[in-house]
Amino acid sequence: MFKFKVKNQYEEILYQLEDTMTHHDFQIGNQRRTLQILMHEKEKIEKLTEQEKYSYRLPKHVNCLRLQTISDTYAEMGKEIISLLHRKPVKAIPIVSERVANRLQELENVKNHLLASWNDTCEKNFKKSLDYRSLAFKSHEKRQSNHKAFLNEIRNLASKTSKNANIQKGGSLEGEFFCSYGSFEQICIYNQAQLEAESLVNDHPMNLRDPALLEDKEKLPHYRFLFSDKEALELSLRMLFAALSLQNN
Image (cartoon, rainbow, N blue to C red; front, side, top):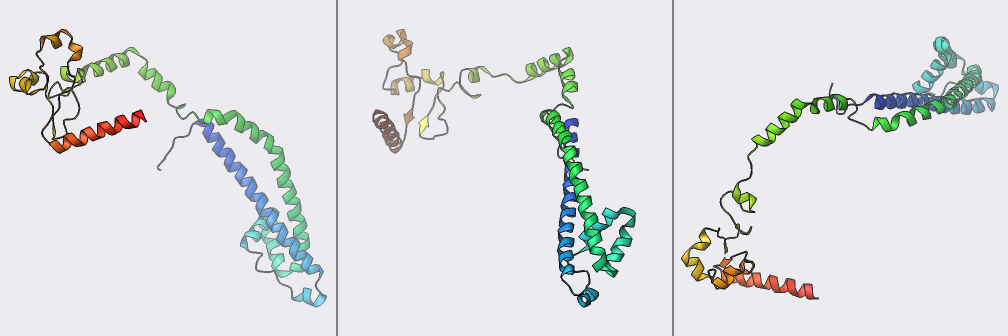
């Protein structure tokens, strides 16, 4: 059988208690509805004439569920009472209705007597029932808190592939990138080794080998974007100016 959820012992107690309470409510509901129908039929019988009483038959709304409730009320005598209801309903209905009323009162008294113990059981077990790990917590902690578990965890962490030098500097596996816009074709991104090439140094509007800049490395640019598409450059500048204007407003 497939179990979608494992219940701890406290939750199991609450489930059993809920089944018990539902069973009591179901019994009381059946008795109350059966009594209502019998009392209604009893009032009708009292208004009938002798001739009408002779021809009176058990109505259809006294169905199998109502008859089963009456049979359960009389226990071993249930079948005989059902037979009398069909053969002599005029005489049987007043007697049966009184017995059903007594049985209803008994069930309500039992429920009222049990309510205190039901409430006490709920209060003692509700918070504990929320601990879904209570069954496996001790065994899990015992397995994970010994020296072997600690050593295995250290070995697993050590065996994992560590970040290479480029990743530690904020780049990728392929190179030491200085920004994260490599997916755009209009933007060319170079690593540190490529920035030393004469063609790039001369192409840049700022002389990266200027002694004045080398003395103060904070003035060096962190990013180097070479736009080969004029339209892309114009769009980028528009976005930049729009952001600045919104910030000023």
